[in-house]
Image (tube, rainbow over all chains, first blue to last red; front, side, top):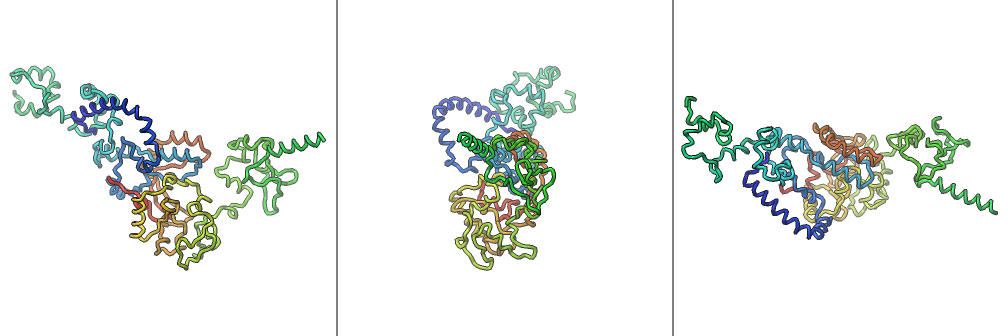
Length: 215
Length: 285
Protein backbone atom coordinates (compact mmCIF):
# COMPACT_ATOMS: atom_id res chain seq x y z
CA UNK A 1 0.00 0.00 0.00
CA UNK A 2 2.89 2.34 0.60
CA UNK A 3 3.30 3.34 -2.97
CA UNK A 4 6.69 4.92 -2.66
CA UNK A 5 9.04 4.62 -5.55
CA UNK A 6 12.82 4.52 -5.41
CA UNK A 7 13.01 8.17 -6.29
CA UNK A 8 10.73 8.99 -3.40
CA UNK A 9 12.81 6.82 -1.04
CA UNK A 10 15.97 8.69 -1.96
CA UNK A 11 14.14 11.94 -1.56
CA UNK A 12 13.03 10.89 1.90
CA UNK A 13 16.58 9.96 2.87
CA UNK A 14 17.72 13.38 1.74
CA UNK A 15 14.92 14.99 3.69
CA UNK A 16 15.91 13.03 6.79
CA UNK A 17 19.56 14.11 6.56
CA UNK A 18 18.52 17.69 6.03
CA UNK A 19 16.08 17.36 8.90
CA UNK A 20 18.87 16.42 11.33
CA UNK A 21 20.78 19.57 10.38
CA UNK A 22 17.64 21.62 10.60
CA UNK A 23 16.89 20.16 14.00
CA UNK A 24 19.91 21.88 15.57
CA UNK A 25 18.83 25.14 14.06
CA UNK A 26 15.26 24.64 15.17
CA UNK A 27 16.29 23.71 18.71
CA UNK A 28 17.92 27.08 19.13
CA UNK A 29 14.66 28.67 18.08
CA UNK A 30 12.53 26.18 19.98
CA UNK A 31 11.72 28.52 22.82
CA UNK A 32 10.16 31.10 20.55
CA UNK A 33 8.54 28.53 18.32
CA UNK A 34 6.93 26.57 21.11
CA UNK A 35 5.61 29.77 22.64
CA UNK A 36 3.93 30.63 19.39
CA UNK A 37 2.53 27.13 18.80
CA UNK A 38 1.17 26.78 22.30
CA UNK A 39 -0.71 30.03 22.11
CA UNK A 40 -4.35 28.96 22.06
CA UNK A 41 -5.31 32.16 20.29
CA UNK A 42 -3.36 31.16 17.16
CA UNK A 43 -5.78 28.49 16.04
CA UNK A 44 -9.23 27.33 16.85
CA UNK A 45 -9.59 23.81 18.19
CA UNK A 46 -10.95 22.39 14.98
CA UNK A 47 -7.98 23.79 13.09
CA UNK A 48 -5.57 22.27 15.60
CA UNK A 49 -7.07 18.86 15.02
CA UNK A 50 -5.39 18.85 11.62
CA UNK A 51 -1.99 19.36 13.23
CA UNK A 52 -1.86 15.56 13.44
CA UNK A 53 0.32 15.49 10.36
CA UNK A 54 0.38 11.71 10.18
CA UNK A 55 -3.36 11.29 9.69
CA UNK A 56 -5.65 13.17 7.40
CA UNK A 57 -9.32 12.47 7.00
CA UNK A 58 -10.81 14.02 3.88
CA UNK A 59 -14.32 14.74 5.18
CA UNK A 60 -15.92 15.74 1.90
CA UNK A 61 -14.70 12.56 0.23
CA UNK A 62 -16.62 10.55 2.84
CA UNK A 63 -19.90 12.48 2.80
CA UNK A 64 -21.66 10.25 0.26
CA UNK A 65 -20.63 6.98 1.83
CA UNK A 66 -21.58 8.27 5.29
CA UNK A 67 -25.01 9.16 3.95
CA UNK A 68 -25.38 5.72 2.36
CA UNK A 69 -24.35 3.93 5.53
CA UNK A 70 -26.35 6.23 7.83
CA UNK A 71 -23.23 7.27 9.70
CA UNK A 72 -23.50 10.65 11.42
CA UNK A 73 -20.57 12.96 12.21
CA UNK A 74 -21.24 12.03 15.83
CA UNK A 75 -20.18 8.45 15.18
CA UNK A 76 -16.52 9.49 15.29
CA UNK A 77 -16.90 12.83 17.08
CA UNK A 78 -18.63 11.28 20.05
CA UNK A 79 -21.40 13.18 21.79
CA UNK A 80 -21.96 10.41 24.31
CA UNK A 81 -23.78 11.36 27.48
CA UNK A 82 -21.33 12.42 30.17
CA UNK A 83 -21.66 12.45 33.94
CA UNK A 84 -18.04 13.21 34.84
CA UNK A 85 -17.61 16.67 36.32
CA UNK A 86 -13.81 17.03 36.44
CA UNK A 87 -12.95 19.12 33.38
CA UNK A 88 -9.48 17.60 32.88
CA UNK A 89 -10.90 14.11 33.07
CA UNK A 90 -13.64 14.94 30.58
CA UNK A 91 -10.97 16.30 28.26
CA UNK A 92 -9.02 13.02 28.46
CA UNK A 93 -12.16 10.96 27.83
CA UNK A 94 -13.03 13.19 24.88
CA UNK A 95 -9.56 12.77 23.40
CA UNK A 96 -9.87 8.98 23.61
CA UNK A 97 -13.38 9.08 22.17
CA UNK A 98 -12.25 11.16 19.20
CA UNK A 99 -9.38 8.91 18.19
CA UNK A 100 -9.74 7.29 14.79
CA UNK A 101 -9.45 3.52 14.81
CA UNK A 102 -7.19 1.98 12.21
CA UNK A 103 -9.31 -1.15 11.86
CA UNK A 104 -12.38 0.84 10.80
CA UNK A 105 -10.54 2.92 8.19
CA UNK A 106 -8.63 -0.09 6.90
CA UNK A 107 -11.76 -2.21 6.62
CA UNK A 108 -12.78 -0.24 3.50
CA UNK A 109 -9.43 1.15 2.42
CA UNK A 110 -7.27 -1.97 2.84
CA UNK A 111 -9.17 -5.15 3.56
CA UNK A 112 -12.11 -4.69 1.21
CA UNK A 113 -10.40 -2.16 -1.04
CA UNK A 114 -13.78 -0.51 -1.58
CA UNK A 115 -12.06 2.84 -1.24
CA UNK A 116 -8.77 4.24 -2.53
CA UNK A 117 -5.88 2.45 -0.86
CA UNK A 118 -2.94 4.75 -1.42
CA UNK A 119 -1.51 5.26 2.07
CA UNK A 120 -0.49 8.84 1.51
CA UNK A 121 -4.11 9.86 0.94
CA UNK A 122 -4.64 9.75 4.70
CA UNK A 123 -1.14 9.39 6.14
CA UNK A 124 0.74 12.49 5.14
CA UNK A 125 3.99 11.22 6.61
CA UNK A 126 4.60 7.54 5.75
CA UNK A 127 7.62 7.39 8.06
CA UNK A 128 5.19 7.42 10.99
CA UNK A 129 3.37 4.28 9.88
CA UNK A 130 6.05 2.16 8.26
CA UNK A 131 8.19 -0.29 10.28
CA UNK A 132 11.27 1.07 11.97
CA UNK A 133 13.60 -0.98 9.76
CA UNK A 134 12.33 0.99 6.73
CA UNK A 135 13.92 4.15 8.06
CA UNK A 136 17.38 3.64 6.64
CA UNK A 137 18.65 1.88 3.55
CA UNK A 138 15.83 -0.63 3.54
CA UNK A 139 15.68 -0.69 -0.22
CA UNK A 140 18.98 -2.58 -0.18
CA UNK A 141 17.91 -4.83 2.68
CA UNK A 142 14.38 -5.77 1.78
CA UNK A 143 15.08 -8.88 -0.28
CA UNK A 144 15.59 -11.23 2.66
CA UNK A 145 12.45 -10.02 4.46
CA UNK A 146 10.36 -10.43 1.36
CA UNK A 147 11.62 -13.99 0.90
CA UNK A 148 10.95 -14.84 4.55
CA UNK A 149 7.44 -13.42 4.71
CA UNK A 150 6.05 -11.89 1.58
CA UNK A 151 2.65 -11.63 3.25
CA UNK A 152 4.05 -9.19 5.78
CA UNK A 153 5.06 -6.86 2.93
CA UNK A 154 1.61 -7.16 1.43
CA UNK A 155 -0.12 -5.85 4.53
CA UNK A 156 0.91 -2.42 3.23
CA UNK A 157 2.07 -2.95 -0.33
CA UNK A 158 -1.21 -4.15 -1.72
CA UNK A 159 -0.42 -3.97 -5.39
CA UNK A 160 2.06 -6.39 -6.92
CA UNK A 161 3.13 -3.58 -9.17
CA UNK A 162 4.92 -2.12 -6.17
CA UNK A 163 7.50 -4.88 -6.65
CA UNK A 164 7.37 -5.30 -10.38
CA UNK A 165 7.67 -1.61 -11.12
CA UNK A 166 11.32 -1.89 -10.06
CA UNK A 167 12.12 -5.52 -10.59
CA UNK A 168 10.83 -5.70 -14.14
CA UNK A 169 11.99 -2.34 -15.26
CA UNK A 170 14.50 -2.38 -18.08
CA UNK A 171 15.04 1.30 -18.54
CA UNK A 172 16.96 2.09 -15.38
CA UNK A 173 20.44 3.54 -15.50
CA UNK A 174 21.63 0.95 -12.99
CA UNK A 175 20.04 -1.86 -14.94
CA UNK A 176 21.91 -5.11 -14.48
CA UNK A 177 23.32 -6.30 -17.75
CA UNK A 178 24.70 -9.65 -18.71
CA UNK A 179 28.07 -9.97 -20.37
CA UNK A 180 28.26 -10.25 -24.11
CA UNK A 181 27.33 -13.70 -25.34
CA UNK A 182 25.52 -14.64 -22.11
CA UNK A 183 22.61 -15.80 -24.19
CA UNK A 184 24.69 -18.83 -25.12
CA UNK A 185 25.49 -19.85 -21.53
CA UNK A 186 22.45 -18.68 -19.61
CA UNK A 187 20.94 -22.18 -19.68
CA UNK A 188 23.51 -23.37 -17.12
CA UNK A 189 22.66 -20.56 -14.69
CA UNK A 190 18.93 -21.02 -15.17
CA UNK A 191 19.21 -24.72 -14.33
CA UNK A 192 21.45 -24.07 -11.32
CA UNK A 193 19.42 -21.19 -9.90
CA UNK A 194 16.30 -20.26 -11.81
CA UNK A 195 15.29 -17.98 -8.94
CA UNK A 196 18.13 -15.57 -9.69
CA UNK A 197 16.75 -15.11 -13.22
CA UNK A 198 13.27 -14.46 -11.90
CA UNK A 199 14.49 -11.43 -9.98
CA UNK A 200 14.37 -9.57 -13.25
CA UNK A 201 12.63 -11.82 -15.75
CA UNK A 202 9.13 -13.17 -15.59
CA UNK A 203 8.06 -16.50 -17.09
CA UNK A 204 6.87 -14.82 -20.26
CA UNK A 205 10.37 -13.55 -20.91
CA UNK A 206 11.65 -17.16 -21.23
CA UNK A 207 8.62 -18.31 -23.18
CA UNK A 208 9.20 -15.66 -25.81
CA UNK A 209 12.07 -17.80 -27.15
CA UNK A 210 11.54 -21.20 -25.59
CA UNK A 211 8.27 -21.94 -27.31
CA UNK A 212 7.15 -25.55 -26.89
CA UNK A 213 9.66 -26.02 -24.12
CA UNK A 214 12.19 -27.87 -26.31
CA UNK A 215 14.94 -25.27 -26.32
CA UNK B 1 -14.95 29.97 85.60
CA UNK B 2 -12.24 27.66 84.29
CA UNK B 3 -14.73 24.81 83.99
CA UNK B 4 -17.12 27.06 82.07
CA UNK B 5 -14.31 28.04 79.64
CA UNK B 6 -13.38 24.38 79.04
CA UNK B 7 -17.01 23.50 78.40
CA UNK B 8 -17.29 26.28 75.84
CA UNK B 9 -14.04 25.21 74.18
CA UNK B 10 -15.12 21.59 73.83
CA UNK B 11 -18.53 22.65 72.62
CA UNK B 12 -16.87 24.73 69.89
CA UNK B 13 -14.52 21.87 68.85
CA UNK B 14 -17.36 19.40 68.81
CA UNK B 15 -19.44 21.78 66.67
CA UNK B 16 -16.53 22.20 64.26
CA UNK B 17 -16.12 18.46 63.93
CA UNK B 18 -19.68 17.91 62.77
CA UNK B 19 -19.79 20.89 60.47
CA UNK B 20 -21.79 19.75 57.48
CA UNK B 21 -21.73 20.87 53.85
CA UNK B 22 -24.37 23.42 52.83
CA UNK B 23 -26.60 20.98 50.92
CA UNK B 24 -26.58 18.27 53.59
CA UNK B 25 -29.89 16.80 54.70
CA UNK B 26 -31.17 18.30 57.94
CA UNK B 27 -30.45 16.28 61.09
CA UNK B 28 -32.04 16.05 64.51
CA UNK B 29 -35.49 16.49 63.00
CA UNK B 30 -38.67 14.59 63.71
CA UNK B 31 -39.98 12.26 61.07
CA UNK B 32 -43.34 13.43 59.71
CA UNK B 33 -46.25 11.11 60.32
CA UNK B 34 -46.71 10.59 56.60
CA UNK B 35 -43.23 9.12 56.23
CA UNK B 36 -42.39 5.55 57.06
CA UNK B 37 -38.76 4.94 57.88
CA UNK B 38 -37.61 1.35 57.39
CA UNK B 39 -36.03 -0.45 60.35
CA UNK B 40 -32.71 -0.63 58.54
CA UNK B 41 -32.44 3.16 59.00
CA UNK B 42 -32.34 3.60 62.79
CA UNK B 43 -33.62 6.80 64.39
CA UNK B 44 -32.10 8.27 67.57
CA UNK B 45 -33.59 7.87 71.02
CA UNK B 46 -35.90 10.82 70.43
CA UNK B 47 -37.19 9.22 67.24
CA UNK B 48 -35.35 11.79 65.12
CA UNK B 49 -33.14 11.50 62.07
CA UNK B 50 -29.45 11.80 62.92
CA UNK B 51 -26.13 10.71 61.44
CA UNK B 52 -26.65 7.00 62.14
CA UNK B 53 -30.00 6.96 60.37
CA UNK B 54 -28.37 7.35 56.97
CA UNK B 55 -24.69 6.54 57.48
CA UNK B 56 -23.39 3.10 58.38
CA UNK B 57 -19.86 4.21 59.25
CA UNK B 58 -19.14 3.64 62.91
CA UNK B 59 -18.94 6.82 65.01
CA UNK B 60 -19.27 9.00 61.93
CA UNK B 61 -20.34 11.90 64.11
CA UNK B 62 -16.85 11.95 65.63
CA UNK B 63 -15.04 12.07 62.28
CA UNK B 64 -14.58 15.43 60.56
CA UNK B 65 -16.40 15.77 57.25
CA UNK B 66 -13.19 15.89 55.20
CA UNK B 67 -11.92 12.65 56.72
CA UNK B 68 -15.05 10.57 56.23
CA UNK B 69 -14.57 7.85 53.60
CA UNK B 70 -17.39 8.76 51.22
CA UNK B 71 -16.55 5.82 48.96
CA UNK B 72 -17.10 3.28 51.72
CA UNK B 73 -19.80 0.76 50.89
CA UNK B 74 -21.77 1.60 54.01
CA UNK B 75 -21.27 5.37 53.80
CA UNK B 76 -24.96 5.29 52.95
CA UNK B 77 -26.67 2.44 54.76
CA UNK B 78 -27.41 -0.58 52.56
CA UNK B 79 -25.23 0.99 49.88
CA UNK B 80 -23.65 1.48 47.51
CA UNK B 81 -26.38 3.12 45.44
CA UNK B 82 -25.99 3.79 41.71
CA UNK B 83 -27.43 7.27 42.17
CA UNK B 84 -27.72 9.44 45.27
CA UNK B 85 -31.43 9.79 44.59
CA UNK B 86 -31.84 6.01 44.85
CA UNK B 87 -30.85 6.39 48.48
CA UNK B 88 -33.21 9.34 49.01
CA UNK B 89 -36.12 7.31 47.65
CA UNK B 90 -35.64 4.75 50.43
CA UNK B 91 -37.70 7.17 52.56
CA UNK B 92 -39.06 9.79 50.17
CA UNK B 93 -41.71 8.81 47.65
CA UNK B 94 -40.14 8.53 44.23
CA UNK B 95 -43.19 9.58 42.21
CA UNK B 96 -43.91 12.66 44.25
CA UNK B 97 -40.33 13.82 44.64
CA UNK B 98 -38.60 12.97 41.38
CA UNK B 99 -37.26 15.94 39.46
CA UNK B 100 -39.52 16.94 36.63
CA UNK B 101 -38.35 17.30 33.08
CA UNK B 102 -38.98 20.99 32.68
CA UNK B 103 -38.86 20.67 28.89
CA UNK B 104 -42.12 18.68 29.06
CA UNK B 105 -44.25 21.78 28.90
CA UNK B 106 -47.50 20.27 27.69
CA UNK B 107 -49.93 18.15 29.68
CA UNK B 108 -51.78 15.10 28.38
CA UNK B 109 -54.36 17.34 26.69
CA UNK B 110 -51.70 19.42 24.99
CA UNK B 111 -52.27 22.39 27.32
CA UNK B 112 -49.28 24.48 28.36
CA UNK B 113 -48.13 23.92 31.95
CA UNK B 114 -47.59 27.62 32.51
CA UNK B 115 -45.86 27.24 35.85
CA UNK B 116 -43.01 25.39 34.17
CA UNK B 117 -42.18 28.39 32.00
CA UNK B 118 -41.02 30.13 35.14
CA UNK B 119 -38.09 27.81 35.62
CA UNK B 120 -36.36 29.96 33.01
CA UNK B 121 -38.63 32.92 32.25
CA UNK B 122 -39.43 35.53 34.88
CA UNK B 123 -42.97 35.79 33.50
CA UNK B 124 -44.91 33.18 31.55
CA UNK B 125 -44.93 34.33 27.92
CA UNK B 126 -48.12 34.01 25.91
CA UNK B 127 -47.41 31.70 22.96
CA UNK B 128 -50.02 33.63 20.96
CA UNK B 129 -48.17 36.93 21.21
CA UNK B 130 -45.45 38.16 18.91
CA UNK B 131 -42.15 38.61 20.71
CA UNK B 132 -38.61 39.49 19.85
CA UNK B 133 -35.87 37.96 21.93
CA UNK B 134 -35.28 41.18 23.85
CA UNK B 135 -38.84 41.02 25.19
CA UNK B 136 -38.04 38.04 27.35
CA UNK B 137 -36.64 38.35 30.83
CA UNK B 138 -34.79 35.28 32.00
CA UNK B 139 -33.87 34.24 35.51
CA UNK B 140 -30.26 33.92 34.42
CA UNK B 141 -28.39 34.96 31.28
CA UNK B 142 -29.60 32.44 28.62
CA UNK B 143 -26.12 30.95 28.21
CA UNK B 144 -26.17 29.98 31.89
CA UNK B 145 -29.77 28.82 32.22
CA UNK B 146 -29.08 25.21 31.27
CA UNK B 147 -26.40 24.83 33.91
CA UNK B 148 -29.00 24.93 36.68
CA UNK B 149 -29.90 21.33 35.83
CA UNK B 150 -27.33 20.13 33.29
CA UNK B 151 -23.57 19.75 33.57
CA UNK B 152 -21.42 22.15 31.62
CA UNK B 153 -20.32 19.09 29.65
CA UNK B 154 -23.48 16.98 29.56
CA UNK B 155 -22.13 15.18 26.53
CA UNK B 156 -18.64 14.70 25.15
CA UNK B 157 -17.31 17.35 22.80
CA UNK B 158 -19.74 19.88 24.30
CA UNK B 159 -17.30 22.15 26.04
CA UNK B 160 -15.10 22.60 23.01
CA UNK B 161 -18.11 23.90 21.09
CA UNK B 162 -18.89 26.68 23.56
CA UNK B 163 -16.66 29.18 21.79
CA UNK B 164 -16.73 32.39 19.89
CA UNK B 165 -17.04 31.66 16.19
CA UNK B 166 -14.86 33.38 13.62
CA UNK B 167 -16.28 35.77 11.04
CA UNK B 168 -16.49 33.14 8.29
CA UNK B 169 -18.45 30.79 10.47
CA UNK B 170 -20.68 33.57 11.71
CA UNK B 171 -21.48 34.48 8.14
CA UNK B 172 -22.31 30.87 7.31
CA UNK B 173 -24.63 30.60 10.32
CA UNK B 174 -26.48 33.82 9.47
CA UNK B 175 -26.79 32.79 5.83
CA UNK B 176 -28.19 29.39 6.81
CA UNK B 177 -30.70 31.00 9.19
CA UNK B 178 -31.95 33.26 6.42
CA UNK B 179 -32.12 30.59 3.73
CA UNK B 180 -33.80 27.95 5.89
CA UNK B 181 -35.81 30.22 8.19
CA UNK B 182 -34.48 28.64 11.36
CA UNK B 183 -33.06 30.14 14.55
CA UNK B 184 -29.57 29.18 15.69
CA UNK B 185 -29.19 31.72 18.49
CA UNK B 186 -25.72 32.82 19.57
CA UNK B 187 -24.62 34.76 22.61
CA UNK B 188 -22.94 37.59 20.74
CA UNK B 189 -20.58 35.56 18.58
CA UNK B 190 -20.46 32.58 20.92
CA UNK B 191 -22.07 29.17 20.60
CA UNK B 192 -24.19 28.22 23.59
CA UNK B 193 -26.26 25.13 24.38
CA UNK B 194 -29.35 26.66 22.79
CA UNK B 195 -27.53 27.32 19.52
CA UNK B 196 -28.04 23.62 18.77
CA UNK B 197 -30.66 22.52 21.27
CA UNK B 198 -34.27 23.64 21.25
CA UNK B 199 -35.70 23.89 24.75
CA UNK B 200 -39.46 23.98 24.11
CA UNK B 201 -41.23 20.71 23.55
CA UNK B 202 -42.80 20.25 20.10
CA UNK B 203 -46.17 21.96 20.08
CA UNK B 204 -45.32 24.82 22.41
CA UNK B 205 -44.06 27.19 19.73
CA UNK B 206 -45.35 27.53 16.18
CA UNK B 207 -43.23 25.09 14.16
CA UNK B 208 -43.69 27.25 11.07
CA UNK B 209 -41.76 30.06 12.70
CA UNK B 210 -37.99 30.10 12.84
CA UNK B 211 -37.84 29.95 16.64
CA UNK B 212 -40.20 26.99 16.80
CA UNK B 213 -38.47 24.73 14.29
CA UNK B 214 -37.04 21.66 15.91
CA UNK B 215 -36.38 17.97 15.51
CA UNK B 216 -38.25 15.75 17.92
CA UNK B 217 -38.65 12.17 16.71
CA UNK B 218 -40.42 10.94 19.81
CA UNK B 219 -41.59 11.86 23.31
CA UNK B 220 -39.23 13.47 25.78
CA UNK B 221 -39.80 10.58 28.19
CA UNK B 222 -37.90 8.32 25.84
CA UNK B 223 -35.38 10.99 24.86
CA UNK B 224 -32.60 10.55 22.36
CA UNK B 225 -32.14 7.03 21.04
CA UNK B 226 -28.96 5.38 19.82
CA UNK B 227 -28.15 2.10 18.18
CA UNK B 228 -24.76 0.50 18.50
CA UNK B 229 -22.68 0.39 15.35
CA UNK B 230 -21.44 -2.98 14.15
CA UNK B 231 -17.92 -1.83 15.00
CA UNK B 232 -18.82 -0.88 18.56
CA UNK B 233 -17.25 -3.89 20.26
CA UNK B 234 -13.98 -3.40 18.35
CA UNK B 235 -13.84 0.30 19.16
CA UNK B 236 -14.60 -0.28 22.80
CA UNK B 237 -12.01 -3.01 23.14
CA UNK B 238 -9.42 -0.65 21.72
CA UNK B 239 -10.28 2.01 24.29
CA UNK B 240 -11.16 -0.22 27.22
CA UNK B 241 -7.89 -0.24 29.15
CA UNK B 242 -7.40 3.52 28.86
CA UNK B 243 -10.97 4.25 29.88
CA UNK B 244 -10.62 1.92 32.85
CA UNK B 245 -7.64 3.93 34.04
CA UNK B 246 -9.65 7.14 33.81
CA UNK B 247 -12.68 5.53 35.45
CA UNK B 248 -10.53 4.99 38.53
CA UNK B 249 -10.21 8.75 38.85
CA UNK B 250 -13.95 9.38 38.94
CA UNK B 251 -16.87 8.07 40.94
CA UNK B 252 -19.05 8.52 37.86
CA UNK B 253 -19.50 5.89 35.21
CA UNK B 254 -17.77 6.64 31.92
CA UNK B 255 -20.27 5.98 29.18
CA UNK B 256 -18.82 5.61 25.72
CA UNK B 257 -19.91 3.68 22.69
CA UNK B 258 -19.60 3.77 18.92
CA UNK B 259 -23.16 4.48 17.93
CA UNK B 260 -25.56 5.86 15.40
CA UNK B 261 -28.37 8.19 16.32
CA UNK B 262 -31.77 6.61 15.87
CA UNK B 263 -34.06 9.18 17.47
CA UNK B 264 -33.42 12.84 18.13
CA UNK B 265 -35.22 15.18 20.47
CA UNK B 266 -35.04 18.91 21.10
CA UNK B 267 -32.52 19.73 18.38
CA UNK B 268 -32.91 22.74 16.14
CA UNK B 269 -31.69 20.76 13.12
CA UNK B 270 -31.03 17.05 12.61
CA UNK B 271 -27.61 15.86 13.69
CA UNK B 272 -28.03 12.28 12.56
CA UNK B 273 -27.45 13.24 8.93
CA UNK B 274 -24.89 15.94 9.77
CA UNK B 275 -27.15 18.89 8.82
CA UNK B 276 -26.60 20.63 12.16
CA UNK B 277 -22.82 20.13 12.11
CA UNK B 278 -22.44 21.32 8.56
CA UNK B 279 -24.03 24.69 9.25
CA UNK B 280 -20.78 25.70 10.91
CA UNK B 281 -18.22 23.23 9.68
CA UNK B 282 -17.00 23.17 6.12
CA UNK B 283 -14.15 21.21 4.63
CA UNK B 284 -11.92 21.90 1.69
CA UNK B 285 -11.33 18.21 1.02
